[in-house]
Length: 150
Figure (spheres, one colour):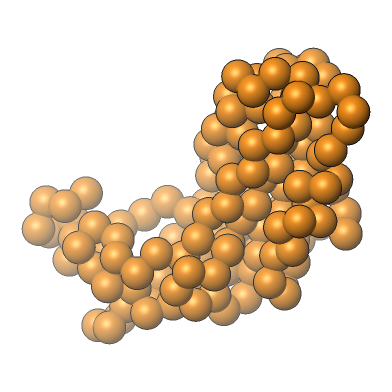
């Protein structure tokens, strides 16, 4: 296990949470992002993620550095899974510990927002009626946009 990593196997939640444990930390916040079945009224069958792994892991570590600058004393672990994922599989896990809960929550939310902004990860959403690649995890199914559900 690395502190910041891209994996192809199911994410081991406990390993990443345990990495952030420290006697000086009073809070650990673990966020897991799962594959959901419905997005903007469209049924998802499954997702496929791809990443430029060396750069993605570098960017995850950069996010960890940014968090440590904004919330000193935090310990961060971030892992994102690539490859095919079924409904309810964990796609991303962010574990943040800090002396106090407020910083752990804020840092965790910051991390997921930054992942979507800067990490070179792409997902392919596979629906009943087609599929679409979405760069940096942003984009919409054409039918949903046409129906005004964006």
